[in-house]
Image (cartoon, rainbow, N blue to C red; front, side):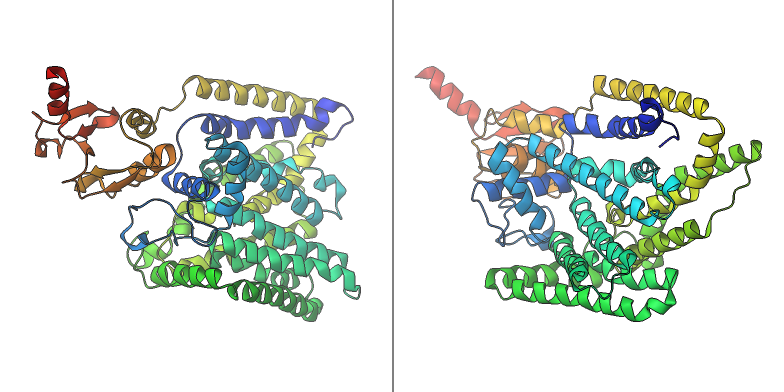
Length: 497
């Protein structure tokens, strides 16, 4: 927030931050394009809302593109997000608005938690605590965040629960009310949040267990005993709650199947791989560096501008500690995942709020000094930035991305009955987009046993294997075709009769 009393001076930075977010979030919420994982999760939630599958037996389709996830139900991830999203489907109906509203809720809640975390960390320095827009801007300026939030990823939901768990622990530690029994509700809530995180994406949601001890190491070694007590209480709450859940037989069966099929197989390097050898283990580190290039450039820019104005303020001790805390917490989220070579960019999402707060803390004292030096120039700069953001947003809205597979799924609706199983050429079966778009838009499952299939999805490579004298071919986008077996013969028969 810019120092000053007028409305535009106080709120322009937030208007700019929201405008910056909408450059990517708004167009991606209005088109038909979504990453395959998000489409699959939306399909599972929609099916659950319709009574196809259940919370502990989620159902995607009768077919799946990954060979190790085929089974009577989908056990690739825990079901909490599917269950929560299914509530929206029950309220709104089968509409893509559900995914977009859910993504918006995730975005808003994430922003609120980052703001609360920042305010709590800087509560002893009110002038810096006012810059709540800065960590939010740093967070959404990471490529993984602005790509992932509109894509319905489980990691986005899990990061909310992880951040909330850390926030509850921070509130307790900052209060220093260690002798007040009612204050211990915060560690209990922190433990419950870790349960919710694990029920969203699995063991990667455990990292908030390290938060209290990291805080003690950074802030006050004399609080070691308190840190151990809080960690024990958080872990105890997690263990008891998870134990009670496992007493329910359907939950036990699902979580056992998930753990053996997903977690164990990933550790044994028998699932998807980011690479071979050491390079595979450090994929997330490379992705993290790719995400913070803009922040590093901005850091250099701010320090150069400060030098030109002869501003020589050094980081305060409290700010340095905040940087240390957030950097170590981010590391606690990332480092355990390096054990496996099953890594994707969106796995960084739970760590990125802390990465954002780290960089915002590095920026904030220089930004504060610069705005105090020339408030009018800061206001003008933010106003120009807002106009630029909306210019880019309008351009993107006028040039909405067209998704060929979504268009194909809508076209197939005109020929194939809802919830059917159609054939697909063997060479196309492992293309995830085909499975997810056809299931999300028309409940379709796929089979490579095409001999008895009336409808077959084909491409130019396998089209010659059909009898084009008897079979009708419907051209689709992106060089795909819907083959309707023996349709020409039926059409001729109808003409003669």
